Length: 440
Image 1 (tube, rainbow, N blue to C red):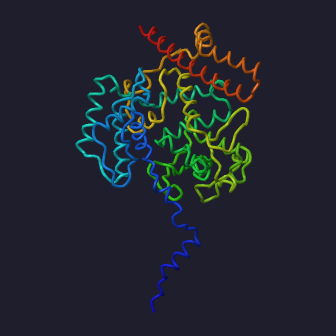
Image 2 (cartoon, helix red, strand yellow):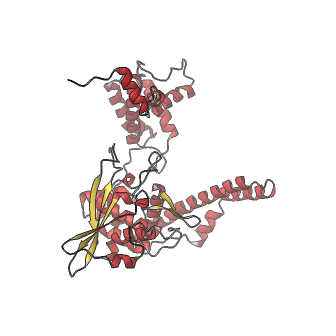
């Protein structure tokens, strides 16, 4: 006898018992991520006193004409600021990329695609007419490689710099460890850092690492480990789909990242049965076996390995942020004698291409003796600039009149941030001038 088929009512009750709530996510699924680009178009028309003002695109809405699309993109350009053009213009490639997002958003929102001929006309217009007008730039960002020579200089710098860069001793361990990981895994920067949507799960955690002692010669052992990369591009199932890569001790301590991993694990008391380095050195691989797996304590499995650390609060349980990591490696780049910024993309390109060429490497930007501090007179000039002086005056006024600690702290934080930014910009200008004068 065939099994009885459940009725639709029984299936619905079963689903509800397991947490299904009919219609609860209607609004969430209706508001698509790409809608923000369509809403920008709508706002642009409102700013231009467009009459009549069309509603936000919905199913069946007709595509805008070519003139309206171009006006919307001009509005977007006016609100944007580029990073690589000295005049602050965005690039024609950026405009075309944004236009692609807009076209995709409109099709998802309305169900109607913007005509292919119009799309091509927009791309051609962005790359020719807008460039000729001087509204956008066609500059391309040069791409360089970060190789062994650069990594060697970086590694030596890590242990020389003071707390201007490393505000906490743990960063002297976890930053070199991270750069080493990027060097040999070729991972994207988001692999080991969380974003706003996955900060409670992402970031490199102890559960993602398998630590093993492997038999070596002379009755000794070496450390090997495997990392499971879960939060990689286009991986929709990070809990079940992982991409493992393995490493082991390097014979040169300068490049041995296992020492950093062990140091952090010891500090966190993360290895089961091992509380001190002496406990590790006493480990022996059983006769007849070639490996001894080291287990993590259960309560440490979900703990991020590289974490936020400050002088005031010590080492937290929150993952190190991408912004903090990026700032530190840029600072170390300058202190290592380079007058350009390092990016993880440069490390990935170097691993992927393995090109040994001066003109494609960071080596062309290395200058022995590159100054890392401003001369006293230029330092004083920055501190005495009118904008900062005005802010200092406001702070003094608040302390006398209002005495609002919250308002004063906010202004002091802004002053500190503005001073840091201006000092950085002035140092970069000075370094470039110094290099040019030296190479003449």
